[in-house]
Image (cartoon, rainbow, N blue to C red):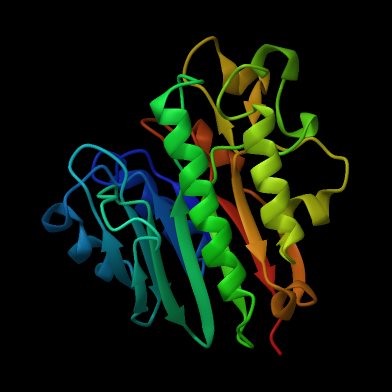
Length: 258
């Protein structure tokens, strides 16, 4: 089974790119971030025509997350992270798909830091840690994936010295990610790639993609039930080179059948 995560940076504006990628690679489960569309504007007909069932949690102009499943309908189990009933940002959705629990997230950017947006990011991260700990109590296979907006180590960022004050690389954020993983999660891509530099995001300007001046901020975390079934993984970086594409590339893992 292939599970992928992709920050589409506008699901309607990049719909042709998304549909082309789905047709060419055929992942079984896909988590999308930055839909930038209200629920009524999610392109459900086009997604269904491509062979996918979907659930989504939209928001006007910003944020938004979705889970797609090839040839089946995801069963929604949660919409929004617990812990803050006043949080109106669409950043988390969760579903049961084929005997697996899939959590799709879009963690706040947090810039400028320090400041209110950075405080919100750290608070959201704490809520994610709390919910993730409860997911680890389940006997079922669980995937927690999406755009985490954090580069965990210096291996995950081109020229790390330029990012020391950025909210994606500040020590507090890296520490929060480390604590999350240390609960018992496996960072699939880092486990597979070892010390290899691998990126999932390249800015649009300064020829960043051509220079491979990237960041690894899109992650796939597996609970212990799934970690032993991890077979392969990678980044579909060719998608970043297409016209009118997102500044992210899709990330995927292959999970062996039981």
